[in-house]
Image (cartoon, rainbow, N blue to C red; front, side):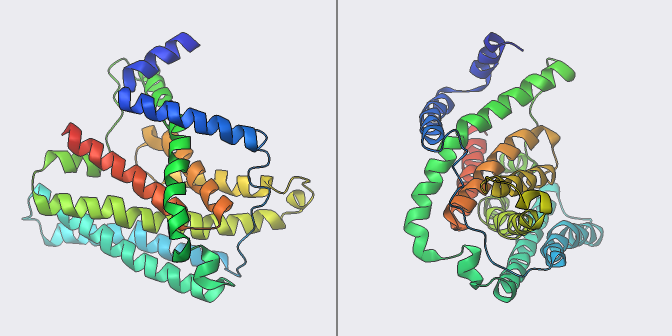
Length: 296
């Protein structure tokens, strides 16, 4: 695909608001490249989070979210076969919210036991709230052009491999949000997508998994010889982002989610605050929900 085709496809899939966001983001991204020597010095001052976590503790919240919750949903389907489709969706989202809350409680316990500075060392310090929220907006805006490019390239690749009728599949929750008019379901989906999912996924992927990977990478003999220390957190960010992308059901969303996750991981390593990627994730999901409601 040449530049002309890419620009044409970009124009077909990006509206005026997206274009304005991308333009502002490109300016910010260019400035970031300038002040970080093309990103080489971006994480030079990033400090690891001291902890003594054994690797198995990460699997406890993973088990709750990816095994216990689906099993509970399957059991409810068998026990309550008379539910309508929207009622079943309401129950499923309620289970995801409950499971996410339980998993977050478990993560907080893990942090209190295994992190040297406990919640502060984990990055949950609300004294930084006044800095993290505006920084999250800027970080997301900076990454927006890259996320959009991944979205457009995915559509183009889908059209080349599947055919000209290829459409980017919509997330199941967003589809339910526009398909069913019942207010309780809309409220539950918004709570799940905009509050519970960003909180839990950032505590798990950035807080636990990325932290553990960074410590593991730093101990590898091949990495101990690296002259550029900033490569180590970038490796942890990339691996965590790949994991974050593939746990989502639709492969068509993986490239954009991977790029979003790079932004989330970078913001965590750069600031040391978990609130920053939580706010970025929350804003991204909120924008998706608003767009779905508006289009519906």
